[in-house]
Length: 397
Image 1 (tube, rainbow, N blue to C red):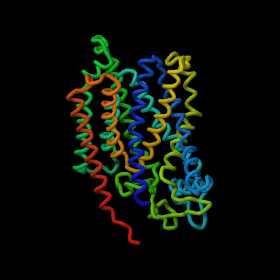
Image 2: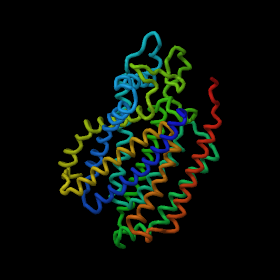
Image 3: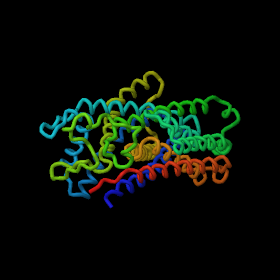
Image 4: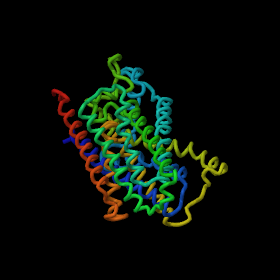
């Protein structure tokens, strides 16, 4: 039962992540197109600063539902991070000090890596339709596959990623007419360069996000993250092969006493990194708000109505859920399966436009076929993931 718990949680988190992304996309477009509140950097700043709440909430949940204390949980996290970031300085006889500067460097790199694609996304959503932005953004699955450091052609995975990319193209080009009808765009506006600029910004953001995913799995995720620990493409920073005295972060190592919980509970490490990114954003990126205001690039304006404020809060909450869930899934499933799985957001956006937008007018042959192809592609990758897990030798007790 305990062995399957992370797997069950990962699929539940996956479902929440999909829903949160769709909510964030629709609310952001509603805010900037219907409510005319176009402050992409300010919205980005609020959403990413809100990441800071994830780790305290997770700690509160664990202390309320388990026997573990906050001190024991934090000690376990510190041990795991020390083993991961400074493994060759950690031994049973002389435990190493927590690598503060390496951890701060990791947080800064993660903040930069997630900031620029997210900023481009917030800008693009004001220029192009939510369907197009969602579709192009999620092509990061193909880019993540190409960026795999130990690249090897696996026919089943290559077929799934290619199939997903084709599905994206079908949705984008097969659903254009319905999207235009839904947005009630005039002929003159359809001829303007703004949708093209939005699509290009989303494409650049997708490339950056793919790189972020690959680097996160390679350098930031713990080796004890439960599912695809045998993925050879994403080797971690170091192994214990060169240092037999190292207490390395392995799934079969368990330390559970009143002072230390090790390995950390499922999701606690990525939620720590998510909160650290939020704190880094909150304390550093505010500098750009007055700069953008005085240069006239983005004049700072506070929300002028309750509906606007409520919508911003909804964007922030859904953004926190999406990014926290995504960080967990990157460590559990790896960038390829996670990014292709997130292509399902295209299907959900398509459905939401039918239910809450243009109704049956939003239905096109391209949308139906493209969404079906995307779901089939994720099914192939999910089968591939489960098949690989069945091939991993079970430990002999």
